[in-house]
Every structure is written in C-alpha cells, then in structure tokens.
Amino acid sequence: MHNSFKLQDIAAIYNLPLLKLIAEAANIHSIHQKHTVMYRNTLVSYKTGGCAEDCAYCSQSSRHKTNVGPSIRLSEKEIMDQVEEAVKHGSDRICLSASWKNVPDNEEFEMLINVGKAIRKMGLHVCATLGTITRQQIVRLREAGFTAYNHNIDTSEQFYPQIISTRTFTQRIETLKLLQEEKMGCCSGGIVGLGESHDDRIAMLHSLASLPQPLFTFPINMLVAIEGTPLENMQPVSVWDLVRVIATARIVMPSTRICLAAGRKQLSDEAQALCFLAGANSVFVGEKLLTTPNATPGNDASLFETLGLELNG
Image (tube, one colour):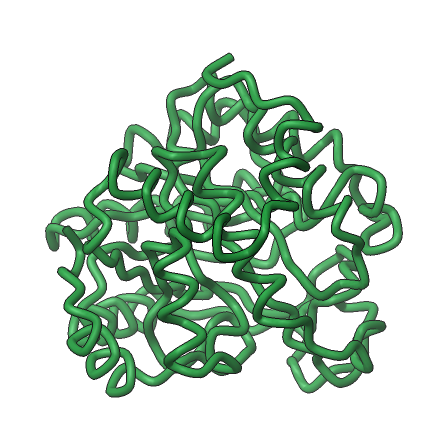
C-alpha cells in the first residue's frame, strides 16, 4: 500500500481547525506538485440519458422523470466537433462519457476506441467514463492511447445503498483495482451534498486513499439538485464543507490531481480560489458538464489570470 493513513488519521486531519487544515494542505500541495498549475479537462458525452442505474442524484437515469431524453447518441463527427471546441477553451484532456451500466462489446465501443485514437493524434490526452468495464476492454482502451478511466464511488460504503441500489460499493472498488492492475490511470471521486455525514466523507476519502496505487485524479462534485430526481429538494452544502473535503484529500493523496467538477458554477470566484488554495488543481471547462451547467470559459480565463495560474502545466 502506498500510504498508511488509517480511518482515524484521516478523521483527525478532516477535523482540524479549518484555517490550519487549509494551510497544511497548501504546504503539502507545494511540496508534491507545482501548486500554480491548473489542469483543464472537457467531458464529451457520447451517450446521454437512458441509463439503467438508479443513482438518486442523476438526471440520466431512465427511472427518473427529468428533462433528459431517453437516450441521445452523438455521431463520430459530432464528438470531434466538440473536441475541437474544447481545444478552443484551452482543454488538453478529453474524457469520453457514456451512460452505460456495463461497457458493451459492440460497434459503439469500437467507435469510441477509434475516436480516442483520433483525439490522441491531435496531441491531446484522452480518458473515458463508460461504466463497469472488463479487463480486456481496459487493455483495448490502453492500447488505443487512453491514459485514464473514471469510475466514481460517490460516497461512503455505509451511505452508498441510500443513493444507489443497482450496483454495490464493492463492485466499484473492484473495478478501480482492476484498472490499477492493468496500469490504467485511475480517476475516482465523490459528491458532497447527498445528505451524507462528515463521517461518510471521511470514510469515502479513506476508501480512495487505501487503493493499491495513488489515484490519478480525485474529482469532487457538489450536488446539483435536479428536478425529477429523488434529491431534487436537497439544500446546497456549505462551501466550507467542500473546502474541508478538498484540503483533507490533498493531504492524504498528495500526488493526485484534485478536480473541482460538478457544481462549480454555483461557486463564487472567491470560493473557487479557496478551493484551489486548499489543493484543487484541475477543472472541467466548457458550457456543460454532462447535463448540468458549468462555469463559463470567459469567467474561467479571467479568474485564472487573476490568480496567476499556469494552465495545463
């Protein structure tokens, strides 16, 4: 195991006075990474909606009555058009997404492999988040030039069944370990604001910090309460809670990129700056993140310039 943080160690860090926690996280960040660098990613959703899962927060579930259509698929040209737009926004990493429970072995998977190769030829990094994946499919993606795969655990093992019943927490962890066995960059994170406790957040961080290898990226999302989902009436969590999770993650996963993902549009520039100070060093750029609005490229450019951030390393 690459670190020895026990659950009680992480709890002690998480519960530090907030300013002390942020200062410690900023120090760890500057020791292990270039703390003035901000990495920019873009998510391109090949298949949106029509998902067989029942994740309580998600508008793409076929079990929820939301404004997302039954299943929208992009053509290869439409994907590449979005990739070219992402480059204009300064992104150098494209994550291809599909709302599958399990990755199929069919012409759609083959098409995404070909798209990944085309994206690599443009000099960009390419990742994927396609659902539960087999060892052979991981090998196929890696050989095509994909460098990371996202598979979020969302929350703690204890709280997980209250959010999702169509898969188990253990299945998610097993997939993450499979990715690491096959030397695929591993990207996994969670959501704050699902109704979870502080102990759930600590347990989630412990599960991820305890994987055999360090994560490549830890995406942290703030719940965007979407009409038609079971969590539509959840009240937003405090920015202080988000910052506490980020700072703790930075200390226990020092070499990992921490990505401020969904919900960033709800944050003021000052709140985002505090997240970056606490250790977040990656964001998604573009007008949308799956089905939720994202921070605008113009505002991002202004904020990053104000903070003196070096983009994409």
